[in-house]
Image (tube, rainbow, N blue to C red; front, side):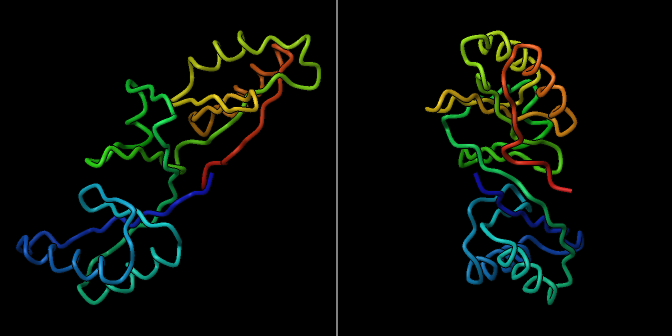
Length: 170
């Protein structure tokens, strides 16, 4: 699970729509966009994000960078809270903002015979923004960046193991 990068374009308000279209065409000629949501552009690498920033500088457009993770369709989404931490684009791609959230795992732990994984998952799911079951028996959970210790406590209480799979970006 690799983070991806975003560039938020802060466009001047006094420009015509064609001005924005010209910028977007130039960006598309410079890097490959994974997706976009209005003026928020998603790319694979920090180098691509830097290239966008360099390109739009000549148009006097300010930028803000971010780190995200794209959640594929195998993730179940808690729609009630997910959009506070991420977004779903028009292309139906789901992106989670790593400045706000982390990905953690729950697993049976060192003594699987005494672990109560189902109960741990049930309690942890109450805090999850999204979740996915892995083939190896782990449950991946997207949670608020401040709830990783809570999930670790839940895991410990039910004799399970937890770990941070993708930490929140600073």
